[in-house]
Amino acid sequence: MDHHPGLSPEEKSFLLQLAREVISLRCRGEGSPQHPVHSKKLNRKFGVFVTLHKGNDLRGCIGYVEGIKPLQSAVIDMANSAAFNDPRFKPVTEAELDHLTIEISVLSALDKVEDINDIIVGRDGLLIEKSVFSGLLLPQVASELGWDRKTFLSQTCIKAGLPENEWKSGKCTIYKFSAEIFSETEIS
Image (cartoon, rainbow, N blue to C red; front, side, top):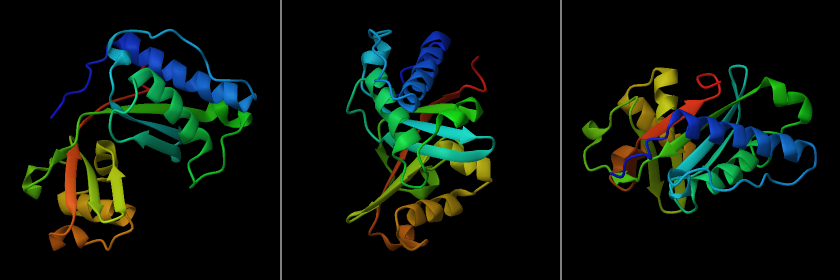
């Protein structure tokens, strides 16, 4: 399993500020920010999710499962998508900006699960695929909600639009991954 980039506090802070700048500029009808690549690590390709919270409520969460773009570019894309293109929510408004907290999850490579006992709740996120269905839950979701391994698998099936116990059928492909997770509440 590829590890995370091992970002420095400065790199994490830069990415969080970049995500906020993307959302703020778009709310004001301005273009995307243009920054030179901040560091070599941010030019490497990693899967990344940007999660927005308003108070304790989810306000948007979208990401790339795999590293298809350099991390810095991917954060720009996903901040934009989480704020304005998450189909579960209305687009973020300028009035909401001061009430949003941004969290970024940089993903490791996917690792196919052969034995569900290899899944460690709190460390691993899950991706379940079957035919055209797929669902992903980040590692922090299971921890925050106090789920055990079987509940985590069932909830990932539900996210995929599958019956909750479909993971037991042997017809799904299950992947695990870990994430380097950081948010504005930790880094200021």
